[in-house]
Length: 516
Figure 1 (cartoon, helix red, strand yellow):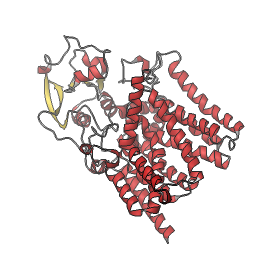
Figure 2: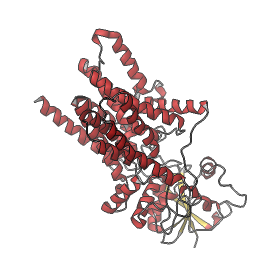
Figure 3: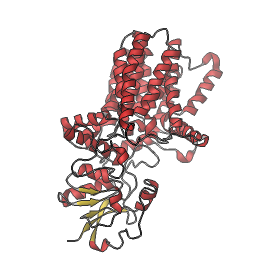
Figure 4: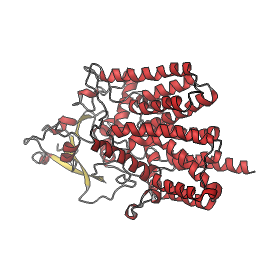
């Protein structure tokens, strides 16, 4: 009976987590980064490869280093995400929902693999249940997995490599699959591939060298290594490389590390809180809550190597943004699932309270009472209520008022307009600052700020270029949205719009139409 009840509870949890991932998936329009991936993926259907030019429009037209010289072939990001999204477009049509589907499926599959891993290698369904419950209700995980970008796929592939490595160690088979999945990771995100596969090699050398069939391991390693080198050659040789910024000063390295630790502790897993719990547990000695078995210690050593390799790489690679750390999540939540399970075995009420605090509040991760929030309840509001952002308002207005072939001058949102309106000519990047009189102009309140912050010195504001002297040629149309620099980006929970901001005369979004 206990087994039956547990299976029912597990099924209910998986259904709940599926709803949290898939609910209202097409509500928010794709923001600029998502739209970039979607445009390239749509062009895969047309040309067979990710082309930044679709015959009418081109995104990042003034950034030639983003393409192979003399071509429109995209070389900034590896292409697996584009072919995956193109397949979704082919099956379900080109729309918001199908753009996000492959990546939210990847997020759900990560939960399945995490649960299976806990059963097969940690020998505990309860640890698996706690782990997926923690991960599946994590707002950073949910937001990133629902993006029409590689985030959910990288989370899945990173943990799949970890899972398959254990199969190689314990079952003495599966080398081919480990090589294939590692290859796919190298062609999905080449920077993440470095620490993930590096951790596999270090684990094999220092923890599992006796269990490894080294001939098979070396042969397996050739495949992903060649894939990684092939992409580096394609994106760098014969053209200006687009590389991640590497921090060289101690000050920058320190900032990168501090940002990672703050992000992990404040938004992923409350590390400081659990260190206190473990210290108390250790002080109790005979009544210690947390006592891992020898097998668990070995697995957690491997987890430690995976996390440490990633943290080292992203300490030197200057990317202080949450999106670059989300593949840490299954590793972190497996550790936290084990910790809660350990407490649950001795103190069920205490474990339940901790679980509730971690899921429904940010109290364990925030020492400052002024910053206490419930991201989970805010996320529930977001997926159960309609959200209208500034770019969605623009695109919806163009749906019913713009004619094919008309010109739209827009920046910071140009790719969203390009995806939803391929029949319109989008004047973006430097063309936005040229004096011209297109049928439509989208002027944002912060356009000077964008010029200075995003493009720095690449474009210059010329005294003869502006809009105050030409707006008498245009009708100003009020849109039902706030003119905000951010759409529903997943990176910063403090500035993420979990609900549509209140529109006032001071923050109103506008579009300008050329008078006839």
